[in-house]
Image (tube, rainbow, N blue to C red; front, side, top):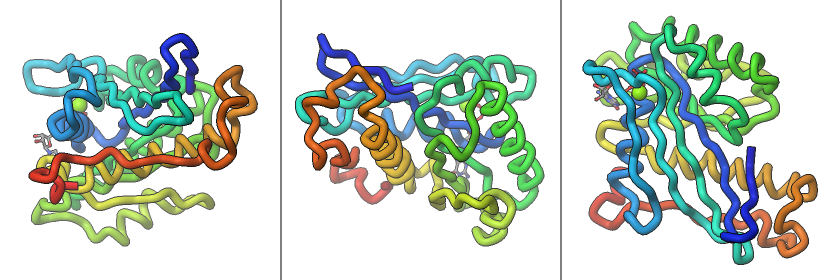
Length: 228
Ligand SMILES: Nc1nc2c(ncn2[C@@H]2O[C@H](COP(=O)(O)OP(=O)(O)OP(=O)(O)O)[C@@H](O)[C@H]2O)c(=O)[nH]1
Ligand SMILES: [Mg+2]
């Protein structure tokens, strides 16, 4: 849930990377960490098993646009993919302001993608949220894999509800479309915040109408810009 810190003059939001086990959630955060100016991001905190599977979660804080004197800070988390850690998954997902669902494009992972989506929906529900209430962006990762399924097929499997989500093709290990995905979900989170800002005991009175919806993208330095 968005929280407003008047003394330090910033608003923080929670964005959670869910998705298919070993689909590339941690790789997304690693790229964001590597790519952004250290002035605008904190350290990447990762708790992983010896096999590099996420044990609890990864965490990275990034700063973005300024809303009328208030900085915006996005707290990025990944959930653990292994089903034995589902209690942790649910806890990390609690009160998320936005979600990136990272699906694995490889043809033999499509069943796992569907199970992961069902598990995501179930965990949202157990937390008292649902997919209609929260900004969700889909990322079809590992597009570089030789056995990548057609995007139309993945859309049919995963993005077939009444409410269509934005979706991006990505290759997180090369950085392709990692920031594009993050910017898309943060735009949606800011837009939703702007529409509900009256509910907060926050800087609403100091935000003019235009400024509430304003946003600027997080971007890579020029030498990494092509990675997106
Ligand atoms: N070919 C390819 N491999 C990728 C890509 N993104 C991630 N990987 C690889 O996929 C494996 C799993 O990546 P992680 O980022 O650890 O996946 P995860 O979703 O965090 O995994 P869990 O936390 O264990 O569920 C690693 O070997 C990555 O290098 C990609 O775009 N293309
Ligand atoms: Mg991980």
